[in-house]
Length: 448
Ligand code: BGC
Image 1 (cartoon, rainbow, N blue to C red):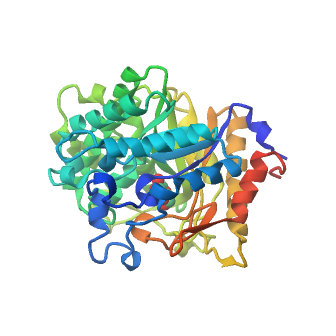
Image 2: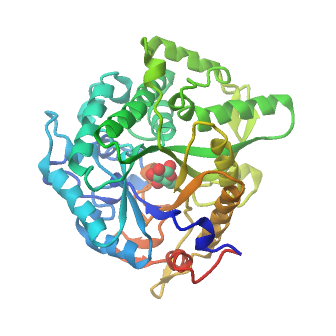
Image 3: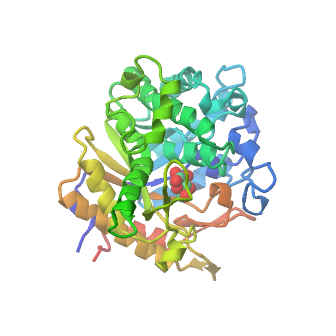
């Protein structure tokens, strides 16, 4: 039996969101377009042509959403700032955007909620993408200036910062595969984007810490436990490469270990973009890392994939239990990732800043009986406890996400929320999983 108190009184329980996925209010109060505003207008990029012009209308409905967080007894609320509301095209500050986030922060504090802020959750201004976006080294100063504005205006109230959300996903899906904004493809986009994101990750940390020495400064990483298809050496080598790509690429440079070039030789192409001193610039001593885990991956050797010679075996081919994203339900993945990251000497503290699942939810007579999500959260939280008991310095857990929202290229189809969103009426209905999480946090139920 595990109850909330078994994690310790200081363990941070929370829920995570991201600006573009919930805010809506496209173009309101002089917000400039982001790469995602632009991408969602392109034909064929998003499931059924969905867009996020309204999303969950959090821009207007935030009072009721923050009330819901409080009513579910969730003490910590993670959200991201939208660069495009805060910085104008001429690089001046948009006071209306600042005022909006002031309302959110004050709204959190008035309700006794602790705000956790992500500086960048994938929505770079389109006017910067026109200059090359993440592939242009100037982004180090563009990003640095934006970070300083955030610190200056919000640092009096924000004590927990995350510089970035999942750089592997926004560079991999956005600059290599082309399935996320800005839809660019190939190594010639990916490698410079990767290098500049790595530099910005550390630079953002440095600027925050310099301006706000008392604040807790971290950054987040996507990760999946990787196993080889079987014990053959070829598949094992493939698993090492995939693991390096998915789980080590952005973490290790921040720890001063450089890129994992030994395991992925194609990364040596980054030399073209490296300048003297970059190895040091890529490193920053973060107070914590955010671990974001949903699933596990199985890797195999493949002749079909040039350069890497490794690929993933999709969950559908393995006949395992999956979520609506076609991601395997595999609770021990989070345990393995926490153990792996906890074993790095320089990783001081870990928060699970995202974990959750999309399932087929239906609203019937005012209720959403999402049994599978309840089980998913139950089983993953139990694995977090297992890692903690074994000495991993994991100090928090945040569910992804508060309410069903705009799931990037998948549009509104996958529902990840603890709260059901009716996207026609903007009505919200707390799902059974929301009540389950509340009851767990209120210590009315335990994990068995
Ligand atoms: C991202 C979220 C996303 C979630 C589910 C994470 O990769 O940070 O923005 O909605 O996973 O796909």
